[in-house]
Length: 512
Image (tube, rainbow, N blue to C red):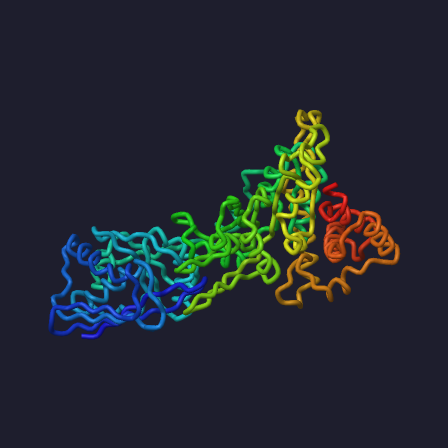
């Protein structure tokens, strides 16, 4: 007897339908074909135990299982449930009439309970796309999959529930999530707020400009000056995620297995802060079974690199291409996997090995050569992709002891949202461009052209401050964002002057 059961394989952040064909005939052997890996082959032992504990037996017959299409490698233990159901249906223990209406995935424990799987959200999206009536997943993944509308999502705890459902002895209750209500309710609650920050008004302003234009930013300052503290409050002033962005972000975290149990849509922009010992593969993604890396997990959010010069040079250099293309392609012998990687890079660093170069009260013990060598750990091409370079000075005691709260994140966020709205309208007809940081040279000439007075100021600044030529475009992009924050159609001299002040590392006198 030939039975077909349906599962799914996740490739990149999308799912592919897997048809599990089970044929039962005379004999007593089991054959599993269709490019399964070791975890899939081991499923036989888990299935036998799970069925025995729940009072069922695998039919004593010749069973041939084909997992089609055979050219896609089937990985992991999530195929246990469809394989078990297919084998029971082939042995006529389960009625097969309803099998073609449902897609199912789940890992079996030896007692028949179901363990959570990775990628439930893209699997549910694929099931709806292919017209399935419903999807059966472990109960821990039910809320994640139920984010998808117009498909029934059943969360089950034990294989016995699935068997009795197909035999008509038990009804399964679909999981229903009010996606929009939950999503919007959680968007504006943050643990950290800019109102807690004492002083640092110039740095807060720079972070507001960076958020408004999607610019990359680096904070340079002595130990304890507040670089990390300020960076960790940045998500509270970024524009809220749209539903589309949230769905894409949740898919990536679902595939990587990073979603919390019973989680729905991700409602806040991701904030990833990997340790400086991270490997290249962990940063970009990949491995023998490709998984998203930190740059993809930071998609639509922030990648914070604390102590930037301490990162391995090769790890930093792989950031260059994703910062431009906003995606990363992982190439393997048999396949290519593409992950989105549109993130805002926020970095922090000490100005020198001892940490006190340019400190107002403590003397630096490093020689000019040591300072320059320390700064040279960050390559020119990477620094070229960072629009704002801000010096963070320690807060004086008078500011620290001031009990008055600073400006709240919600107030700053409103200004950022208004500036982003101006940019969305400006680039509405340009696919792939959403903010000023993504402007091309052609768009700079169109929307960020300074007047004669501004050009004279820019020329004078570049000559006097010894700014490098690569700073020119970056200054114009940041000036355009500052103009948007002030709702100004044209770039004025004051906007350019502020943007020039954000290029600390480009000054040739920085390292003495």
